[in-house]
Length: 40
Image (cartoon, rainbow, N blue to C red):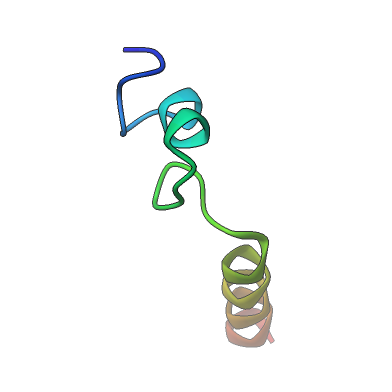
């Protein structure tokens, strides 16, 4: 747990990587668009 853990937000920030715990903004937007399209 903490900075060394790649599965937490803090760990992702310290390593400078992205993933499930800290997705990039572009990925969030595409997922939200898909959900909105599925809802309509």
